[in-house]
Length: 260
Image 1 (cartoon, rainbow, N blue to C red):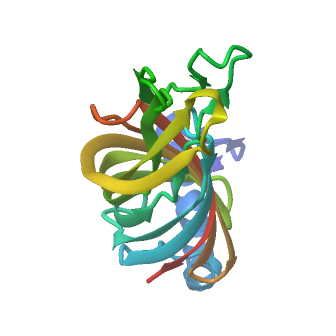
Image 2: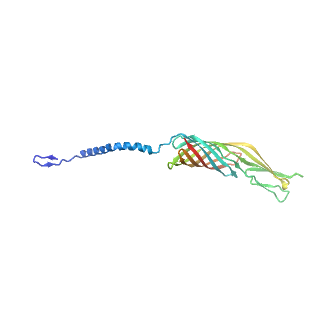
Image 3: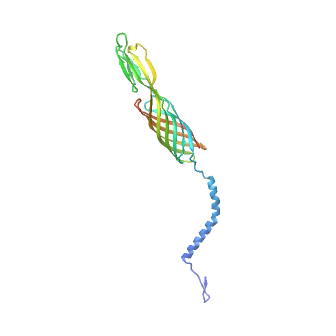
């Protein structure tokens, strides 16, 4: 307020610029007053927040049930994996995989009512047959030669990408190369005309087969203990070389993995 010459008072009006400066000063004062408290809170938040995981690496083992679209029976697959974590989400996964036995059933022999006719084989998709007619006292024969089993083992290299749903549950997808080899076993079955003699069945290792195929998978992680992960996954790969029928495999696995 300003006193006039006649004794009255004038109310001085503040300019908008003066009001703005006062607001800034008030806000600055409030921030300065809160600063000590903010400095105390920040370290506390750092202590309770979850630290970012280190890159490090991993090692693990998995056991899988195997499904095949051509084999009549399959074994159990076992796998050891290891490698570095390139980033928090991306890992380079090496592995050694035993895919278990691939077994193929023998064909069925049917003997005709007419003893002059030769027997026949059914279920010969994995082999071939040859026929020899009888002569004199020698009975005719039908011979089946076909795949009996093979047991593929391989070396793996994959890129695996993981993403988290929570602090303890995450998922992953992966893909890479499956370099495999196996010993091939064949069976030979000779059926004699008119059941003159029992079946002659022999089995022998005939060849080594190998190939390179893609392998792809997806799965889930659960971390019940620090750095220990329970791993569930589905993988698929195809074994395809000229000596055997194309064999598409699905492996449903459970395993344990350690992060370091």
